[in-house]
Each structure stands twice: as structure tokens, then as C-alpha cells.
Length: 123
Image 1 (cartoon, rainbow, N blue to C red):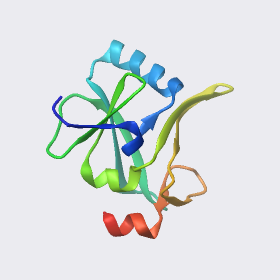
Image 2: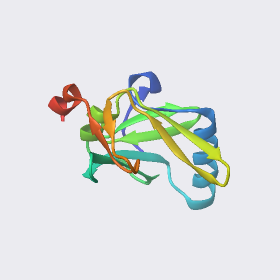
Image 3: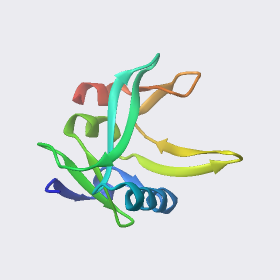
């Protein structure tokens, strides 16, 4: 994967728990890293998209975090800069939790979010 390399402090980082989960998933299912993106949808405006990264696209940024590459497209990076991705287990539920300093509000169901006005101007 030939995406531009940066440290996780410059953009997106994983917690050790998230990195462990992603590493295990990639070992079983393939992929060079984790692709994280933001897409317009839902009642609040945006949702996170998480999938295995198999190839770098033009302008992609790659952040190394706890041994896992996180790949982000330039448009999504404007909304994700400073985000920490955690993997949590609560009872029978488990999944990613996003600590994104750019989020201004989330919808009641938790499926979508709105970005602070400063980040909207960069997108």
C-alpha cells in the first residue's frame, strides 16, 4: 500500500483493544489495514464506514497505530482528524466506539452524527 505515511497523532489512532481486534480480523479475512471513512447519511448527517483496506487510492493518508495501518481518504480526514477508535465489549454487545473531537451532535439512535461547523468548512 503506497498511501502517504503519517503518525497517528496527525490524524486517526486506534486504542490497543481496537488494534488487537483489527489485527485478528485482518489475519482471518485479509487486507493491508483498516479503511476508515465518513459518508453522508442518517438523521444527523454522517456515518462512519469501516472496512478492510486492500489498496491505496489517490490521496489516501495512512496512519500507523499499534502496528495496524489506518487508511483515510482526504475528504474523510477533514472530519476524522484527531479521532481515536476503540473496540469495546459491554455485556453481549461489542463494537467500535469513535472518540471524534469534531462531532457536534449525534442522533438519538447513535447511528449518525453532525460535524462541528469548522470541520464542515474544510470538507
